Length: 149
Image 1 (cartoon, rainbow, N blue to C red):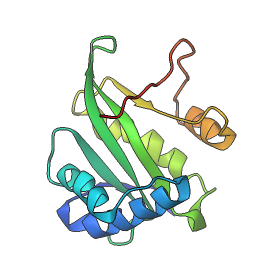
Image 2: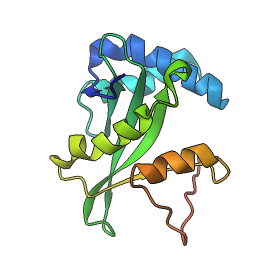
Image 3: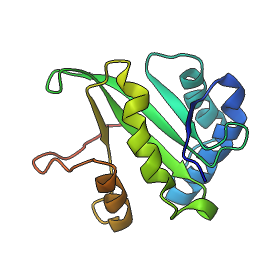
Image 4: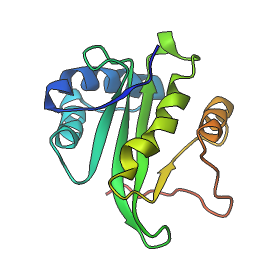
């Protein structure tokens, strides 16, 4: 099974929204379909704030990655956060997520990206192993914090 990345477009909204709903249900994220679609739609239409990549065949994706862009003086310019990464349960454990995360910097480097960040539960050993295999390292002095507005 291939972890090929395809930049998602507006015509992929239904597929991505379904995958996203499955991910949110799995993670216990409460959100309406309307809110979910409204958050995804701009990223499919060329928004400067981020992109969505389909994982696997575009007409029948097995997962997706949402990337949100930012700017970092510390990292010297454009950076990104992996906001969501989801692989269908039936195809997990085959290295697809690792392959996708390794391919991601190649897909984004032409745009001048300097760093990619992500958030992970410190107690999720499988996710930590996956992210380390893909080249991510913890920043021991730092903790990701949020304030919902």
